[in-house]
Each structure stands twice: as structure tokens, then as C-alpha cells.
Length: 275
Image (cartoon, rainbow, N blue to C red; front, side, top):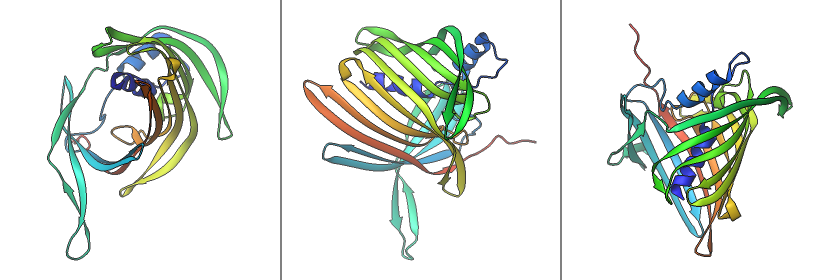
């Protein structure tokens, strides 16, 4: 299930800018090279994220700080620490960090695209604004890091609507995907649509502008369904300012419902030094 969730999450984020003069080959190259975690950030940059998960009668809340500690040709190394908040003798809030746990985000995503075809142009209206979109069909191929249910890869038929001039998600205003033989599931489908542009969100001492997307996912026979909303900002190292998801999963005849949300609460960006 977790590999499938990771793939769906990656598909949600996998997009890149498309200019009117951009050829399909250029678009393919851009899509395959857009995976650049913590782009524009130097070691020492960090984001703080508060999360809440409700599963049945159980509720779990946490806050963590993710810090970029190194970057090389293999990827970026992230250090994650739990965050706790206390009051000092004067009643001021004191933030304390727990023990560090390191992980690596790969420099290469493992996602490729094949058989790109421009099928039409179509108008999409978002908050009263019409966007003239380039509609492109393609096949997305994701290589599993480890085999899942005997499968080494998963393929999805994807249609994307690109609009020039939009910054977040590389100008994608709509995305639909259908997947067959998706490892643990016989099939899956997903959709994503832009619903708002330029929404402001206060994070620590800064205010960022976000594009808001709503999405839904469903596996064959609805073993797992999910829907949610993401606030995406090009000004953030991880891209996501806020996420909300409702998920339902069936296993062994038991249906489990889960609600989860996360929000960036603070950040610090170290930018490359110039002479």
C-alpha cells in the first residue's frame, strides 16, 4: 500500500512548465528533469511541519523540523528532528529539538515519460479566469525501488492540461491518470484540478503565495480511495505549504478510514552565497 501511495503522491507532483513554443520532446525532457528536491537551498535550510492524523478513535499529533545537511550527485541528505514546545520562567515559548534521524532523497526520481501526444487546446476556468490550455497525453513509467507484488514498474496513462504563465506545478491546471497492474492493485485512477491561484499563507515571519489543488484517487474495486487538497508554493523547499487528505482502505474485509493534515509552520532558507 505504501509503495502505491508513494507513486500516487509522486504523480500528483510530477509536472513541469510548458511554453507555447515548447516541443513535445522539450516537454518530455522537462518533465523527467523537474525532480530537484530543495532546489535553490543550501545546507542549513529547514522547514518545520505540524501534522495530525485521525484513524478511527485514535488521534496522533506531531511537529518536526526537516533540515538540509548535505547535497551531492546521489541526492540530498535530510535530518529530521521532533519538535517540542515549552514555556520558560518568563512565560516565553521555547522550541526544543529531539534526536536527529537522517534520510536521503535521490537525485534521480525514477520517473520517465513515453509516447507524448498533443491532442487539443481547451479552455479551463479557475475562479472566473479562463486559461487556454495545451492538452497532452502521455504514458508515465515509475520504477519501483523494490519489487511490489512481483512488479518492477508501474505505468499510467496520463493527460495533463498546461497553461502558460502559471508558476506552481509547472503550469498544470488539470491532470488525469489511469493505471493498470499497479503492483498490489489491479488498477487505479486519479485526478487533480487547480481550484485557486495566489492564495496567501503566513509561515513564520514570511507570507507565501500558493496555488490550491484538489485531487482524488481510487484503486480497482475501491480497495483504497482518497481525496484531498494541497497548497503548493514555489517559494518553499518542499513545494507543499498545506495538505489535507481523507483515505479509506479495505484489508481482510476490514474498512479503515483515516484523515490526515499537515502544515508548514516555520522555515529558514540559506541561499547560495555570491561574491
